[in-house]
Length: 243
Image 1 (cartoon, rainbow, N blue to C red):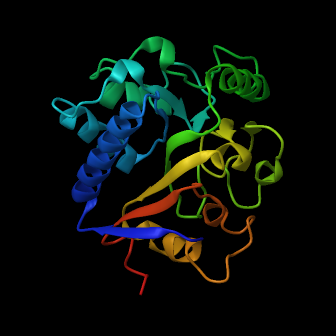
Image 2 (image 1 turned 30 degrees about the vertical axis):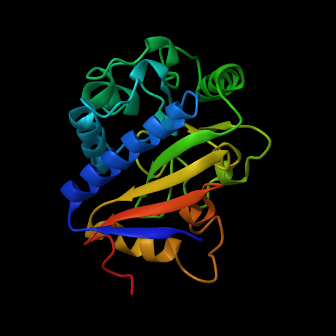
């Protein structure tokens, strides 16, 4: 992976820095006359980032009514399940800024679709109708096993091509059923930012940045990147196994 590594003292510093960078990027895209398209992620550090984005929004110059919001993956559970990435993002960010609800595209819950496959198809249709040629920023977490979104090592979803979404079953972490963007969809990003916090992710970080690049089925995170930039935002513990 050809990526920029940005090290932060701790998770709080990482969250503040990423939030500021995101707001600056949104302002820049809007200044170019476009509606920025952003892909959110889940996880502890993502929640900290989302809260910081909400806190720093006043005075930032971002017109949230002109921001299009997507997700990289979602747990295929009930709409009110506390583990849903969309619900967490709404509580931490989207309910605290003036977004246009018509431009917020959550993945299907088990109440919206009969199966994860049906939900993945529905999200592909939304991307076809409301997406653009490229996401402006895709934010991703990194699992201890080096998965990104819900693309887990050794899973068949890693090989899906020619479509933007995939149903994932037998996830190694609960819940077992999920919906995820595919590598094809993630490759449509101008910028990919991996947000990584904690010593438990340090080995995955080192493997992601290894040379030569590891196999996709071994280290999925090594196979994502933006067309213009790829940045790993790491706190000190997450970077502890790097030179």
